[in-house]
Image (cartoon, rainbow, N blue to C red; front, side):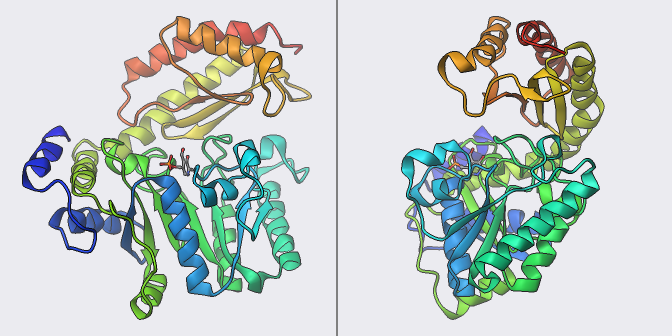
Length: 382
Ligand SMILES: Cc1ncc(COP(=O)(O)O)c(C=O)c1O
């Protein structure tokens, strides 16, 4: 990775985005070849938020419609448009945001918005709810439905089988652009190049960043279907960024994708998730009453902490701060005392190591969690 960046730095560090560059074309080719279906064209950005901004602009121009449906449990970035798409509380201080954003509930069986008791029921009811939202909004006014195929920061919510295919069918029925935000879930995290590959679903646009080049140099982008690319062959896409397809970033993307393949990183992520992380987290759940739910895939996991397993009362309230958030702060402090820097969100602790994490490192993380969970167990009334 470092050699690829060094070599590119010696050849060409920066170039106008209007000029063709071999490394940009190469990075685009490698990404397009791995993207599902006819998603063959890549528009590069500097990160995930910009990728979503541009995807929404493409969907609006392609359809001539303006509304965008976005999930409540979502994070899409911190620019003006992307934070307006975001459903969680980081959006609140920037409201009113982009007009035309409409919210829906995605599937989340553990805290079902639809009183479902099985994955199949949750899937069916979440899709029926989406249809109902579209009926009241007027499906003909909706340009795009954006979703994280596996919701990241807002819960590591793995969709039930059939959900993404159902959204795909609804988008096809109403001529709506399906945008998969794979900024967090893509490039190995779910054990595949793209999370949608798990369910064999092809969106119209995929947004990416982070894992595309293992984060070595800022890079993101949108992978575009042939039909949408054809729109911008007829009328230019009125967008572009000075650093679009930056040579250093593209050189690192090409190197990263090749290394992923040479070292079997996606297969490793899938295997270590199935055989080590999942079983070990479930083993912790059997011993710690504060764990209400364990879910995830690949190297993308969360444990949801509760005060009571029967009622599922969260360990801390939604969006808690200050004294209300103390139980989670104590858990974080206990982990840090054991040399592990945790990622927590609301009442959840996320277990999201690098894609090339070793068995020993997973064991180290699990052991630290095992000790630290004693702090959360003290609040348990199970
Ligand atoms: C799903 C998702 N989309 C978009 C973003 C924003 O990406 P960036 O921070 O590169 O702008 C993030 C960042 O965490 C994300 O998780």
